[in-house]
Amino acid sequence: MVASNWVAASAQTSSRRRGAVLERAILDAALEQLGTVGWNGLTMEGVAAGAQTGKAAVYRRWPSKEDLVADALRSGLPRFDTVPDLGGVREDLLALCCRARDAMFSRPGLALRSVVHECDNVQAERFHGVIVKGVVEPTLEMLREVINRGIERGEVRRDAANAYVFDCIPAMMMYRSKICASEWADREIEEMIDQLMVPLLRPDGA
View 1 (tube, rainbow, N blue to C red):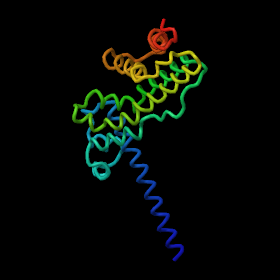
View 2 (cartoon, rainbow, N blue to C red):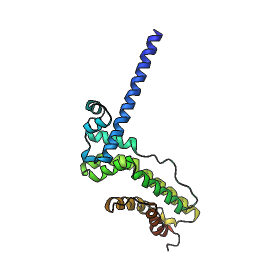
View 3 (cartoon, rainbow, N blue to C red):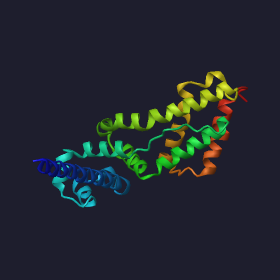
View 4 (cartoon, rainbow, N blue to C red):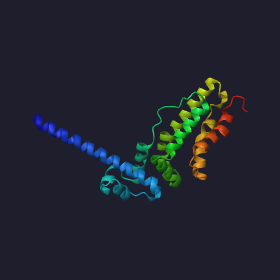
């Protein structure tokens, strides 16, 4: 009886592992499709082929393309756990922007951009919460910490801790990426920090 229970439990564990591996493969295939053929080109059949499984296995877990993509984005977006602390606001902002740039051009980043650029307003609303919680809020929180730390050190003017200032870097990076096809080389990031953010944050306002 004990041996029978152990065999049953082992089989259940093995089945769960196989299910988790398949789910990860499907999510990875969805991110890959988004990064290569985009939102409009992504199909459940194509994702199934990429994951080397049947279409039914995809539909069993996700009843729609929107549901699948939302979960793929949640699972793939980078986790920003630590805020740069390199001793100065300029250096911290440079490190933060380079990290954001690398995330934008990673596979999950390309997937996210295809959703943002290609979805109509109704479709985009479906992913609004994913983008805000997974990308916008963590980025703004880190910018807020860097700028507040600069205020405490006397590097940054005290009234700079406001939503318009926090929005400057994300807005500029998204605008240049989307409208100007900028890939944000290190030199461009340095120029943005030195020509926009440093003068904007400087205590004397010069």
